[in-house]
Length: 374
Image (tube, rainbow, N blue to C red; front, side, top):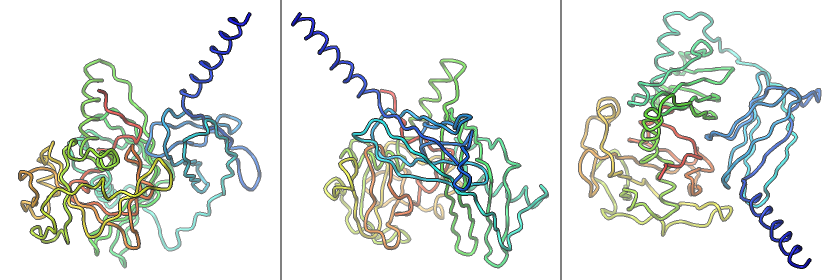
């Protein structure tokens, strides 16, 4: 009898242990804040991941996440304000949320969007695609499936172009094998300041490969897109593997004069890290610019042709000419960049990136929960 009880106890512990390893479950309901009525088929997802669902006919949802970390829970429904909540998945395995969405007041003021798809609309669309998807090899294999849902407004006084979409921009990326829903919050091309800015929330869906060869091509392209990216860089800083992963980091006083580097030696950023808001995050404080060379890939012909500053030989590091050069600086009023092991950055607006990282756009993105196959 004692042996039977011991066996039952052992099986119970094994069951609990296996359940704890099954990840996290986030569930809840979505309703109208004014009427209390539930909202069926609302979009519920974690931004920059492959975790996303629609609410059912009763406004309920459930998302399962395999890895701990910090995620941005986003809920969207046409005609309502976007709901966003930063969630840290660490100890508690099940979370439940009742979310009430507030109806959105549509008031564009003096803005009148282009109703007809005339020549101006077509020209603005091309500008949007160049800015949003980019010019990389991956961008050439991307297609916006619902272009007609985009509206544009050119403000002559500001000399700026704005883009709007009431529904997610649907992108088919045949290079990486992803279907992307991009919920555009802001898009502006400021011609006076020569500054392009766009912001939104992304959810990825993996496309089904029809052949094993296509699956291998997609995995290789995803790996190439990930390695050398900002996401990969921050993950390497967290792990203390910058040199191993192919990065050379220097401190530059400015990036307009390529000869002005404060320290020609490779900086060990791991020594600069401070503890973040939780055990899951780290903070990277720094001054001036971090001048980053990625040595495991060369500049692509597309970058040299379209984006390389003035065609200059923009390398002052210990690396060979032609390797991928990027630089980052803190935004005004910010003291550090906070990020996690996955490369997830708490505040994407806390810093600016230029150079090769500025060249890579939506066409080169992989989800935060992407892991290269070993």
